Image (cartoon, rainbow, N blue to C red; front, side, top):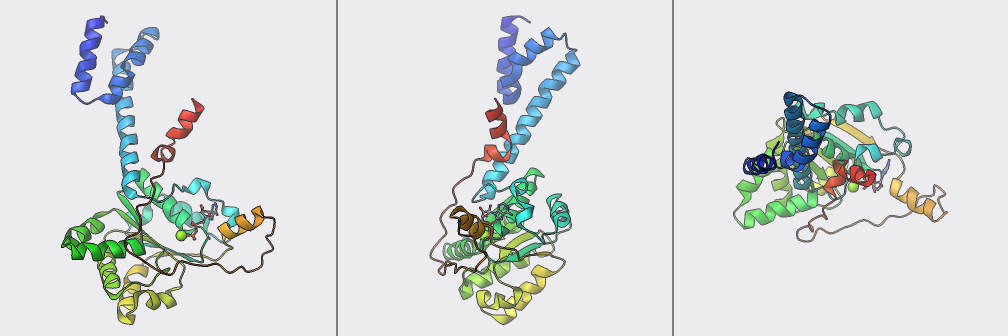
Length: 290
Ligand code: ADP
Ligand code: MG
């Protein structure tokens, strides 16, 4: 192909927004010539590059929009440290069946047992499956809803939270909600009931949820909806965090250690630092591998 033709072709790809094809045009042309590729094989390979590039960008965008506080994937979860976890159930959840069946997933257990890790891992899997996902702590969501009501944007925010294909609600129970916060959170969850699933993590058993939501009738109604057809995973193994830090200091003895917890819920939670979306798409490893 003549140089001018290649230049016009590159311009056309640019005008058509086929940026991945444009980036790979030269090496692909070279390869086609060297290997005497068919026209159709050449075009197929180039269009596949565009499709893969776009799928990767979509995934990166979904991961960014999900606002996961840290990148935690299921393949970095150590099952040996979570004896009693039903691995088959976890694999089944990772496949996303619960999303199409509109079933919630609830992780219950004390701090450090990997609840946030597992919930994030499932969220990342959902993003890979093309599901719009949002991760938020119970406290941050309650604050966001209260602020939206004050700013007269509540109905828009409620609509947004109703639309996410998957909502991951982390740390429900660490901090009690105000009456207003509890009621607004109830609205979000009631709206999603039997329509779109929620993953919840909590350090409290269901019997103690009234402490968090205040009102017993509201709590009962909430639990009734949340637990209906839900997968409930009880994380009753040792805290991974505690075990790791004590092992690091060479003092792990299995003895109970007092853990201080957050007790206040002031203002809006700070925006979580963005994790490297490249890592989540496997790009970083590819880059490291050269
Ligand atoms: P929780 O939400 O139950 O308090 P986290 O998910 O925040 O616990 O876990 C605390 C830390 O320990 C995180 O860095 C998490 O990645 C890690 N962790 C917990 N359990 C495991 C596990 N089984 N394998 C690998 N890392 C784990
Ligand atoms: Mg957690």
